[in-house]
Amino acid sequence: MLRARLSEALVASTAYFVAYLVTFQILMPLQNAFFPAYPSQASLLFLPHGVRVLSAWLLGWRAIPALLPGVFLVFLHAGGLNVFMPSRLAAIAIAVTVVPVVFYALKAAGWNLFPRADKDPCWICIMGVGVVTSLLISGLTNMVFGSATAEYIAFLIGDVAGLFFLMLGLLYFFRFFGNRSPKA
Image (cartoon, rainbow, N blue to C red; front, side, top):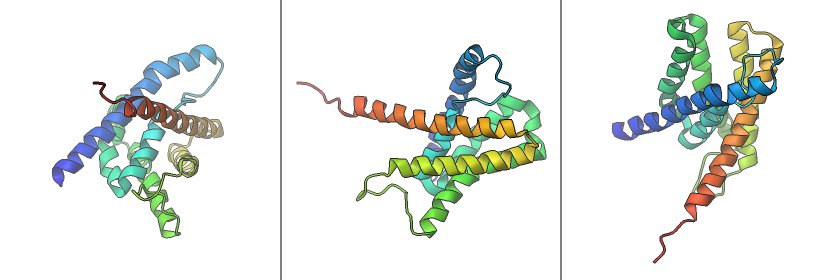
């Protein structure tokens, strides 16, 4: 059991950190080249939100401890030892808890979106959860940091676009690699 939880944490946190690096080392320089007058430091294609949503969908409450190391490392990488400031710790808590809470709230309301063997996933529903959780996370995080409204809108755009493109990329990845069978 412990081994499985550590494995989940390794996969989810690594995916979160890699998505962060791709976003800020590759996509942000492209964004700044194409939109030099864009005033926000937020990414318009924030892939880590997709990792948060898909991890919470697949793992449920286990996504919280699974994502926590990766989210902490992202905040440490981005802000150094400021990661221990109360506002940063609150933002970390928001980042790892909001999505699972929304999935469980929907389940309690009779709308269970968690994966089941007897039912195909409702991808549009998962995107909907991504939009709702982006609104919540952006609002709560910007409230904690005292950010401007433009930041809130940029976070929303980046989260939703990041989730969409991550889901699309995974769909094509699994279609391409999932249909490959050894040839005799």
